[in-house]
Image 1 (cartoon, rainbow, N blue to C red):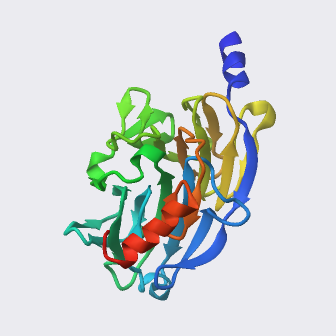
Image 2 (cartoon, protein in one colour):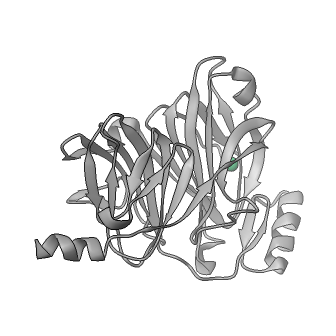
Length: 289
Ligand code: MN
């Protein structure tokens, strides 16, 4: 009994609810921008979160033709559909449903991300994760994770967790060697299921409900989170998730060590100072990426 009271006491509460804003990026891909808007600029170390979900080809066909990145990481997690990735260093690959690409842009890459389908559902997320000052100019690195390489754990009755990054119990996600020590979990709850997820108390964290509604937080202050809403999680250790009695819920739960460094952001360049942004623009325009 006392254990559960203590557990509740350190359980994270929802401190803010954020609804995404419709946005268009790339060559006209329609998406829902949840982090990286005027209303919700960032959640250190996370700079941007987009959900793209459409079965209307016109919403996604144009894709994201050739564009640069410097100073941070882009993380693409596909729920449905196929996306072709290719960069200016000869790397390419196909992202399929359930796969993850954790791309550390470092000093710079130029790449394209294009749908490899002409109809059907395209659904997934792109998360931008900041790099510490000392790694913004490091060499680029890819971690391409096939769907079957993401472990799925049955964590409680009716609760399944795909562990993309970080630890869940004794299961470690395939993404390795990231400075912000991220946790990235895809959680699926059956109707009525409850799950207590431990998270490092050092980390900033959010949950984003992408199917159904759920409740987040300790029983005495649980917050209802609707599909399409992001819940910012306050200080504490784990977080309690529960699906309503009559419907399942799915969410991503993401946490990372805050960098607490100055952020200078200009489109696809995220550095620490305006001077470094100017340098990034010059380097890109003169073909030094
Ligand atoms: Mn990109």
